[in-house]
Length: 306
Length: 332
Image 1 (tube, rainbow over the protein chains, first blue to last red):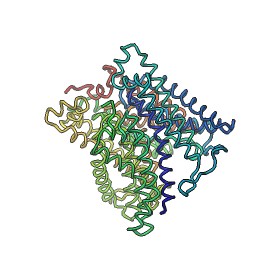
Image 2: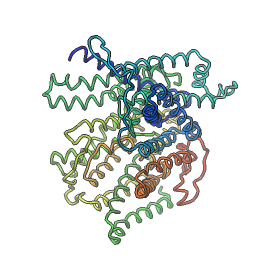
Image 3: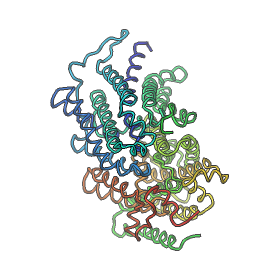
């Protein structure tokens, strides 16, 4: 194992972490203020990926496709919020899980009806297609761009939550939404805006992931579950926790898959090492989650909610 | 302690279920035996889920994990040539107890939404583990060539599995009828309504919840054991999180906390799925919105199927629907 390979694996991990952060920040915000668990968040990711890919293939403009993906995810998010989430805010999580589970089935099937069963192909735009050399190893520009966007979004989210009136109301709403409402703030509108913001971020993650993962029905499911692990580890409701946990989990996952079979090969015969290595690598983040919960049941960053 | 109405209702339900194989043979449609055997197996799992979901109020979104454990015990043991049903059953129960205790201990450190996500994550962990174990078929699943052999009884056909599942389900229903009002069942239901008070009474909330989780896991594992014999196949798709979601849907359709609810729910869900599948290959496009509707209506303690079949459900307060449904009929 050489250091440039290690570096590029580390960057791959970082890039996955950014995608996870985009997804889990929305999820954790929606949970933090509305006490709502949205399994259809993975569907919004899929909507973003499909709309982004379709508009890019039709128009050839990368920026337009990103905007279209975010806008469509936000619109679908607003629809979900209005029709399904809003009536269920006050009720048991069981019904929220059930309703969004049904939505997820619906969207996965809808994608098959519209785009078919096979992965939908989309290319990386021409102007960001090459690779740059970092410390002697070539690394794709597009993946670096994803990391950069993630940093910008993380900073933007911090600014929005900590420095603006909207963020102040959001934080207040997470503590006591009844009180905010009594003080004359339209809390329903705030909730809708927040839901749409989370949906747009999820759509952004989807459209960015489009060219490097396969765009197909059900693509949101595995990512959603990773995002759930992220918000549990990071502390439900905490954006800072989500950022930290997303990066840590993605890097552990990526490095585990790349190096565990190799590391186990030092002590086990090759075939056994390969099997065990792959098996353990696929379980690694869940084991990490179990450990975090065993010692810090509310996640590594305690959220405002608890 | 048995209420006459519940006993009559259960007797009628199981009598109808017992007639199905004979009707299927008379109609010369053996497919229906397989189909209803599947219904009974899922009903068994849904009843088990109802113990944690309905009585303890713990929303486990990872019960497919136990189905997978049951399936793969049969699969892996028969892969190594052990087709003795008693040994398989024993290993299945032991595996479910061990995994149930470990997973339950971690999961029960959280509550509410955290519990939902963590049970889901653990079942995904088993899912990915089975996919990565290429020795046991990996992604493609594992064919089971020898059915479980119980000496006097072999699970080698749909009707054998059907009767085994029927008998187990009947035993479980009678047991649960008693269990709900047993001291342990009462404490379990109380932990959902007011854990602090249960704690003050000197019971260990964690212990009671863990015991119910493990018990539910073992029964679900046995359902998985039957499923593996029914399909002669163990596949990661049995552990996929959709299965956990479908089990929850079955419990909610039938009415949470009611003993026969999950059986009716499993029947309704699988029949609905089968009808829609016969209609269009995009059946999920219709099933998805139906599930959404069930969730939107179900929050009002609207056990709508039960209401269709019997009388309108007594309406308690709209908030905290699980709590109100699990105490319906009795007071503590």
